[in-house]
Length: 412
Image 1: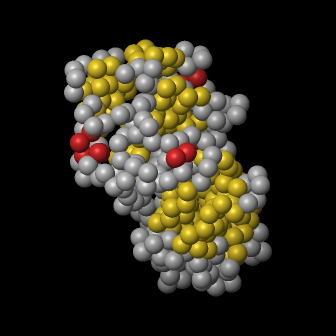
Image 2: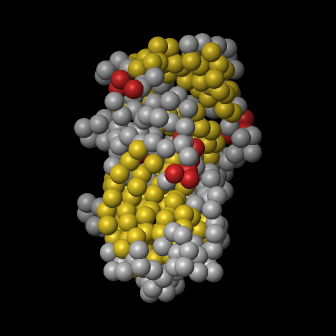
């Protein structure tokens, strides 16, 4: 999602999202540096590194504008460094990687929504363009990647990139947002992938149950709700669609995103399976095996789109993060249906738990109801996940939850 938004002066937030993998499997850092540089003229930038706190789930913040280090000493910050009157830098050095995904954010040093007015800084759309903000990654003095803010970007906060702490893989994001403490998102159709306009969005605090925001999606299916720090549940509904709920938290001064997928109400004899995930891994595939009366059992996935009973079962294949991958069973037949998720982008992996850290969700619908949702347990090793079976005679959904490694999709 890339909202159209207003621009102001900017500053950086570097965030590490929590993941679960053993420290022994993490790559050594030694001297891994992430450097934010910007034009000092007309810009005031500030940096912070947020490390994961496995006990509470709320990260530990390391400011970048002053020298410092995390409590365990796994990362340090340089404070502001002026190489010249025109250029300022802030440098983070990661000495030991933490499990999870590092995110690099940019925002205004003095921009606090405590001012109570989102328009406090006006419509200065030239700030991002003139800041020349750039984030550069070095591994032991070797340049790995450099990301410069889009010269046409407008907005109040910029998500530059994400860094996987287990593999050192850098993903360029380059998205801007209009607010710091807010929930943004987009809503799309599970079958077509098209944006859904005029979907009703209600945001409630999970603790107090208080409704804190209400809106409808625009023509691009996008939503935006300003919130304070806290835990939230987002309810999304639209006529002729099955309503959904999503949980999200806002605990740091950067936005939270919801990528929502709604499915239309389907015939009572049909079953629809919707796979969604996060930005990582990039490409997941849904596999379904099952009975095909008068023929051998079928195996449906992106490379096998055979019609079953004259109908298409694989509705949508996605190859670029988030999903959805959607399969519809048009009436059950006697036999057993097997559903599996495969990390296609990590198909050659023989170890690791990247799939389990992908916020993978599998939802099963029948008629106008969500029957069941599965989430892969974090920290589970494997690049495939056998999720469930369906008994074609009774409609019973049978939990499987088995994982392993397989490079050949035909074998799943």
